[in-house]
Amino acid sequence: MRWLVLFAALFVAGCASDDVGPSPAELKARWEAQNVVPQNYKADLVAFMRTYLNDPQHVRSALATRPVLKSLGDDDRQRFVVCVRYRERKSNGSYGSPKDGFATFVSGRLDRYVDTLKEVVAVCKDAPFEPFPELEKL
Image (cartoon, rainbow, N blue to C red):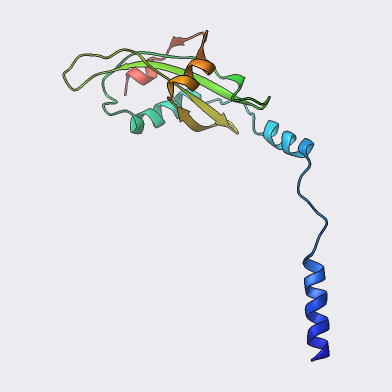
């Protein structure tokens, strides 16, 4: 019985550690290591928009920016961002006003798409849009 108690005490002591996790510098380095320029950002966006849009075959006036590192909040952490603007056909056949959004990329792949007006305006104001014909060819 004594051996069992001694073994249990040694086992519990072996699990205890002074390791409190990665330092802030290590966390920052990990974050920045994931900032890889997305090479296939247009293909990733087209694949996503195919499932995101109600009527992906009827998109007009599609525009997008090139990937740019931008801060996405109150801190100085950055991600590659691509802003997107397009017009989608309504159910009555007419085209609505332009819709804006942006995609963030982690490790060169699309991570999330944001279409909340407040966030989009903050991130995409003064964005240099270019034609995005790939989105119109869905």
